[in-house]
Length: 216
Image (tube, rainbow, N blue to C red; front, side, top):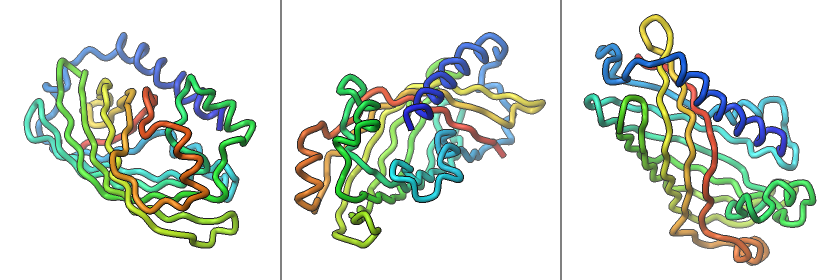
């Protein structure tokens, strides 16, 4: 997990630098026939083949978006993941060290699944900002994957990134970005899980990511 996060950060930074040198076209000049786009975060590829490993987040996420005009893009987001420790542990709190030491691991897992909406605003050339709102259904599980409780979370995220289109018709794209996450509503958490959550924040700052997609 620690290696995967490090690779994701490095990949996002290299992609930003490398493609910025080679791709200069304004995304507003892309083929106007491509009104729709589908994308997913590259980090989910790291879960493939890991099965039931303790720190496997089993993350699946897809976005379907429609470009309204040269500046505005709206869409829907489906995501599901499995947490093994509180999400509010920040980088400067020793996030990666706590994964290695397992000191903040839940007495089981938290599965969160939701379908939400997204809005993306193109700011300048490929530079964009976006906001995502994801209502989530929570399922708490013990270490044997038996259900303990259900709950609800309202998860929001705020993104800044760059859209790089490539290919002969600029149909394919990547979007390296950083985002901050916040969950303002979080209900019905079992006491053993809540004690761990209360040690940390109800937000996570500066998460790097790289999205891969196609326009059609």
